[in-house]
Image 1 (spheres, rainbow over the protein chains, first blue to last red):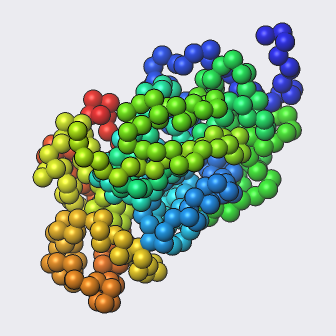
Image 2: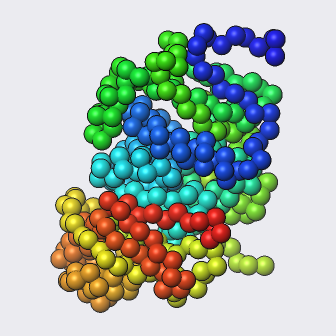
Image 3: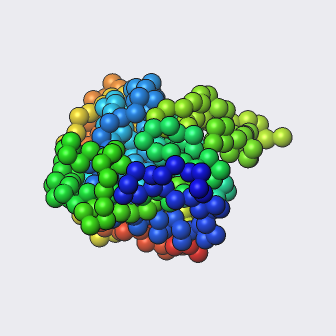
Length: 273
Length: 125
C-alpha cells in the first residue's frame, strides 16, 4: 500500500473490497438502493447531459419506437428523442418521483425482474446500472431480463463503469469491487432540493464528484455506493460466455466517458432443434 | 402510470406463470387523470402491434372509458377518430392511485402518485 499515490487531502476516495461482498442482495440494498434514495435530489441535479453514444443510439431508433429505460434515474434520456416513447423504471423512489413529475413514465422495479411482458420493446437502455450488481450471475441475469422484453431484432444498449478509466477517478487496477463515495457539499443542499423537481441545474453544485476542491466531513455528507468496475472485454464476455450468446449478437462495442458499452441485438426466433 | 404501461405489465411472481391468469392485472380502487400529450401516428401504429387489444378494451370498459371499437379497424391510419381515441386511452389516461391484482396468485401491486410498485419480496422472485 506504500506505493499508492496519496489521494488529494480530504477528498474521499474509492475503497477497494478485495472481493465481491458475500451477501449480494443485502449489499445492493444498503449500498445501492438506499443510497440513491438518500442522494436522489443532489444526484439528479448532476445528471442532465446526455452522453453522445446514448444520444446517437436514441436518435437512431425508428420514429414511434417503444423503449424501456431500465434504471432511468431522473429520466434524463426519456425525452431526448420526442419521436420515441420510453417506459422508465428504477429502484429509487426519490428518482422516480422526479422522472414522473417531468411527465415521463416511471415504474418502481428491480432490474433483475421487470414485470413487462416478453418481446414487447423495440429497444432498451441500461445506463450505469448493472455495475451496481455484485455477482457475475446477477449482472448476466439483468441482461437476460432486458433481452427477454425486447422484440426480435430489438436493440439493447448497456453502459458500465470501466476499471481502466482515466478521468476524474482512478481505481486500483488489481481489484474490481469498490465502495465509491458520493459527496454532497452542505452549501448545495438547499439549491439541490429546489432544483430537483424542475430539472434545472445550478453550476454551484455541478456534481460533488466533479469537484476538485477538498471537502471535509464537517461541510459535506458522504455516501458510499457499491460498484463492480468492468475490465476491457468483460461486458461482451459476460454475454458471450452465457446462454445469451444464442439469443443476441454484439452489434457494437466501445469505450466512452469512462465507461465500456455494448449494443446487443436480439436474434430473430430460430426453429427449435 | 399510463394505460399503455398497464397493458405491458404481467404478474412476475416466480410461480405465477399461467398466461391466461397473470395478464392483464386487475385494476382496483383506481383514480384517473387525463393529461394531454401530442399525438404520434408512428407510435400509435407501432403500439397497435404491441398491445393486447382485447385486454385494453376490457380494461377501458372497466374504467368507464368508452369509444374504442371491439376490434382494431382494418386500416387504422385511415380512421382518425380511432387513432385519436386510442391515443387518449393508451397515452393520455393516467392512473394516479390504485392497485393491480393478479388473477392467478392474488399478488397486489400498488400504484402511488402515478408510480406503480412492481418490486417483489425475495421469496417471490
